[in-house]
Length: 427
Picture 1: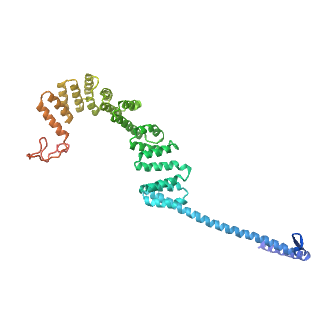
Picture 2: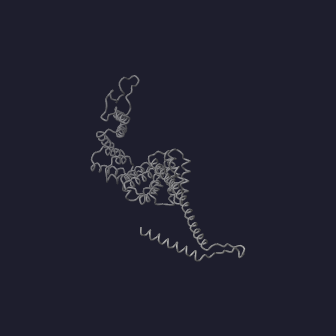
Picture 3: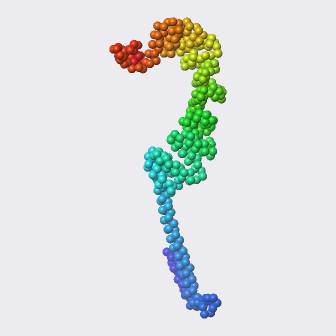
């Protein structure tokens, strides 16, 4: 209240001073235009001062109004712009949720609508491209990938990975590898890129390419150790088999010699190599590897294969195998192996004994056939025929029980209706 009274008093005093000044000093102001006396403006000094003050105030007021107007327009534009961005963000979020749920049509629609105003159009186009791909729109997917690549200079890797995944799903493995090799020039150690390359090489069956990739997978692909070892084993196995299928003995040996000592000591891989040597006709080398394996670990499949090999010295082979009989005990597969080695050494009686012991331990068509062949050569044709028949029945034990012409009973060697063997089959 005191401040108001003081301000009012000061204003009255200033007004009184101003009135007295106007009365005591009337004065005037003359403005000449262009220096011509006839072109002049004369007015009271105080009127001019008041007009000047009012003009300045009017100017400031006009500027204030203009500023307020422009600020209002800017606010409206900002609200419109940010409103559209909020809509775009909401559509992007909804589109990504639909994408993760596998609703490809909805995802594609939401992502494409929000792409023009999106703060991250690369995400829109990549996800929309995958959605279009899943819907079967291959051409549209490629167009959207091109738009994604045009979003910036740092999009090449993301676009290449997306394209490679689609090509992998389409089983276009060569194109997938080409796309990834181009991307590899940008980021050679990218884990996802290396994993996609692994899948493409594996599905294509390019074991040589996959073998070259193994060191990079080990360093940069973040694979579990057991997963990497299994992959490495499969690669080497397929390389050995491929060399055998091409009947390329030198390539087979080169592949084996290129393996590290750790893998050459692997039982599975060394056994496979011995088998491939046998298939390609190098029994002498195969016998050395199987002997090395069986001296360290008993494997029935290795023992059967050992009996089929023609080694450098048949007598030595037999001696080695008889040593395993003492070490591992009587086993049907080992006894069959010994019988075959005895036949190779022309020890007919001993071979017959081993085959018969093997059949006592386990019925086996191959062993029956071996013994039948030996007995037939020795003149025991009836016993040989019986063994051939037993072996044949064992080999085709899954034949159904059917009637035959002129015979009401089941076929010879087959059980009567309803009978089952211990294994649950007909025979």
